[in-house]
Length: 134
Image (cartoon, rainbow, N blue to C red; front, side, top):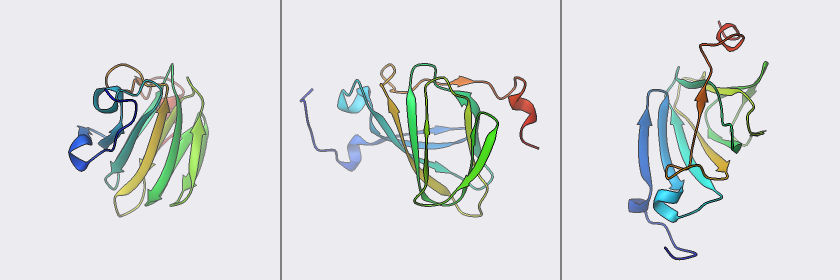
């Protein structure tokens, strides 16, 4: 694959998960990037990615629209459009759409992990994460 390239809409592949949709802008499978995985995430009202961690990746999340309830370990903060968060590798976090409209945000993970660019360890069923949100 070329060292640099333009991306068309056809290059951006979406994955639907039970907590939302990820439109992959960059990951090894579509750009060959080994250092950057980037996706446009859409969360429907009332949905979210429950407590999890990325053991080998740092993450930056930047809200484009909507209101999200963002957790970092045991701390919670509401994020609006134009706000974001940096999460170090291995730090437990969660993101929930508490608004009445879909929430959209960019997420960047580094380095890429595997062909999908992303790895996650779900911990929402474990203490103390299963007691933080009512």
